[in-house]
Image (cartoon, rainbow, N blue to C red; front, side, top):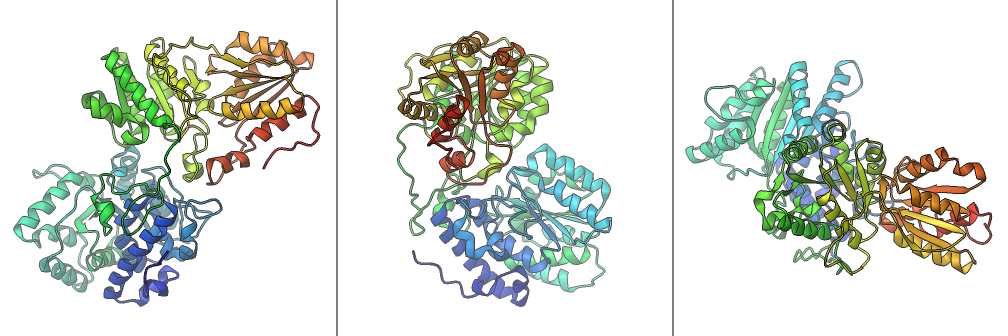
Length: 638
């Protein structure tokens, strides 16, 4: 593949190299950097639109500040590809999101230029305030700069941090990357104003910059800028803006794609700021790449693609995705029951709720990046008799755990949690792995916890959740396509706490919970070749457990192996606790739990990650053989 021509970018190996370039050359660097990002992501896939939107910001920040002594914290981190290229990782950028390659997010262990790792939203201001406070307490660190998007700053944690930062009054720089509100191209008056501002009296208060922005613009552009400011700071009318009330000095809106403008603003702030400052930079997601700018999602997350046409090279699925199966099943429930609604925290398409939203827009509530609010909002709906399905990724639901405990489980309110991305997720790595939801939900009183072993089971579980009004419930399912099984024309209401036996044997029982059932079948075939008779059971429920089934299986087998796509302390621990208290192990019964290991697993293909976790069919077979004292010629794959 032809690589872009990047003569100036080739001279930049670390951010300090940018300081040797003129402002005009920095503009060219940004153009070349954009082409390099497009070229790299076309080979690896990843978060393209967000990265293209911050190319100029990345160049300007690194040209003005002294990273890594100054701490640059990117919120979420999915827009960090230009930053990685500028900070000594260009030679590895085409390993992005691959096994053994660069992370798709900021990562402390990867580079000293990533002072704080991220992949979830709304953490940057809190972290940056921590760095600023450490500096003021005498630690060897410089300025703290947080870059946060307009979506992320809507979350409660960002406002908590802003409130704290404002009351502390420490020098802190927050850049709001607002790609929802673009502004007109720069005009001579703005450029002249900024140039004069920076070159004028060094003692001039930074407030002069904030006050002069709108006044320096022509009438139509001034009105547009005022609307942009009001979107961020609140309504006009003689009152102080929200951020000013919180103690921040507001500057903007600034054109986030105008290098000279950005440089002037950042240089002025770096020279004169003596407290917390918010710079409002308006950008365009997917900027500079026509297919991304024209796309509805601005190429937020893409597969490998042809950089000339933008056509993505997605393989045709063999089966529908679990996400789409959930979305269609929920639509069917909503058509049958007017009380069924969906709730998402800024992920309608990612969770499949877009299917219901397209058909019944008033029955889906997107609350923004606010998982805590989503959970308690669902609890309030449930208290009225509505049937809310709160669809949140496993790793994101962690953010609303107190609300799950206090507002849902404690009050025994029938909120239905649809937990997508359960298990290991591939290129997004450990930050998005759905490892812990079984452990953190199954220990809660009143909670029912289910896991779908295939897409047909998922349809049954959606129907079961809709019918269950006695308290909260959750059902988990993985990322990606299903196993290809036929979907039921009429879904069943599963008996709560009832598992099923799928294959009967006499030596070993493989008790699966969730989507690793297919690996259990493969393991049973391997064991059968060694003369081991295998029972396969699908637990369906981690809570309540099917205690009669557990005890029956324990009575009729030499060993039991539990298999799950979750952490230690989950389903296997629940089974172990039940059987131990019943005295089953007093009689020499062999038992093993197979879970994700007690460590985070780096990005790779899902198959490679499960191999790393020791959860392949061969691993299951080896564990079963070891449990019954047969270990010859079969060792776990690693």
